[in-house]
Length: 229
Image (cartoon, rainbow, N blue to C red; front, side, top):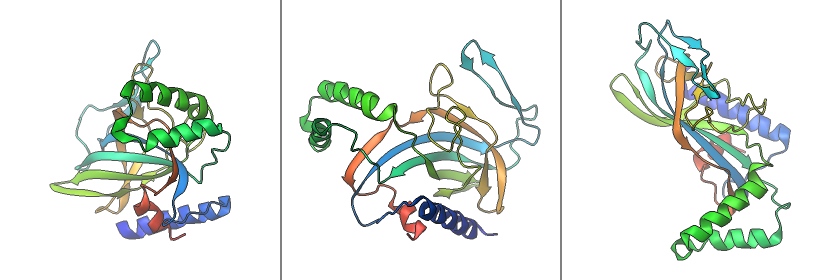
């Protein structure tokens, strides 16, 4: 199966799951949604790579180890995992807080940074972080195959899974000390070999807290347009 065929299959399955869940999206209409991401470095695993559980107190240093240290394929880059909850119902947030959210969202450079930071931190902690489980949707990447460079969708297998939440939802890439989590058991569809290959994925502190958008254009139009909803 070609890379484009595999992508079409992926988007078809996503669209069908949306319909089953009653999710409707108009890519040309402004909507409310919740967004998060995790960005990881990835590379093809060596054939002899093994996952080793390793803890230093409360810090999880588990990861893949290999004697050869030679990737099976010349396939590496950066993968961004996108988490989106479409048509997010934020009616539980007090009206005054929503007014302030909209006010701050459109003030731009006019707002005092310290005032905004304090408010945004409290808003996120009180109304978003403790209530949401943003579902995994898709992945994009900039990557290299041999000496060729690409920028496109990437298909992760299986879908990202949070062991803490026991679901395919966002989980902060925390290793017990900082946002440097290693991920076990994932494969990425190789666009030229046309098959899934095992990869090492490692986050190095590039991730996103819950970001609420109200009556906004979708920043993920490339994704929603492929769903053909």
